[in-house]
Amino acid sequence: MLGRFLLGLQDYLAARSELLHIESREAARFAKRQAILAVVLLVAVVFGYALLLLALVPLLGTALASSLPDNLAPFANQISALLFAGLHLLLALLAASKLRRPPSSPLFEITRSEFEKDRQWINDQQNKNGSNS
Image 1 (cartoon, rainbow, N blue to C red):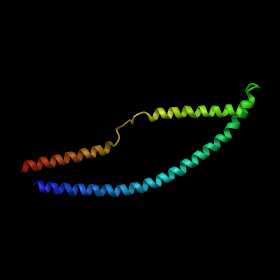
Image 2: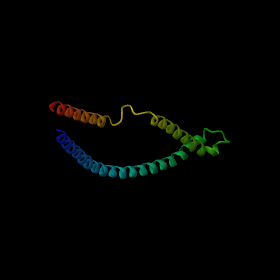
Image 3: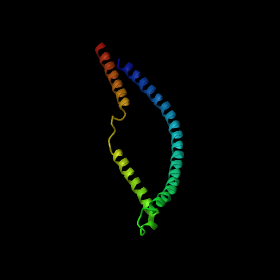
Image 4: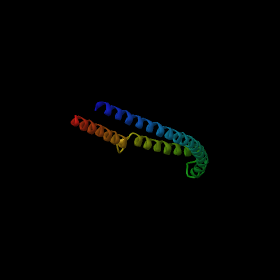
C-alpha cells in the first residue's frame, strides 16, 4: 500500500513540477516582453512630462508676474517652479502613504487554497489507504 502511495505521490509531484516548469517559461517570456514595454513607456512618460513642465513653468511664471509685487516679479518663473515642486511633493507624500497600506485581500489566496486542497486530498488518500489495511 505504502509503495503504491509513494509512487502515486512521486508521479503527482513530477506532474506538478513539469507544469510549473512549463508555466514558468511562459510567464518569463511574457514578463520579459512586459518589462521592455514598461521601460519604453517609462522613458517616454518621463521625457514627455519633463518637457511639459519645462513649458508650463514659464507660462505660469508669466501669468504670475502681473499679480506679484514689483520686487518679486523678476522671480515669477522660480516661484512657478516652486509651486510645481510643492504639488509634486504633495502627490509623492500621498502615494507614499498609500504604499504603506497593507493589501486589502491576502496575497496568494488562490495558491494557498490549492495547496490546502492538495493537503486535504493527500490526507483523504492516507486515511482511505490506512482504513483498507
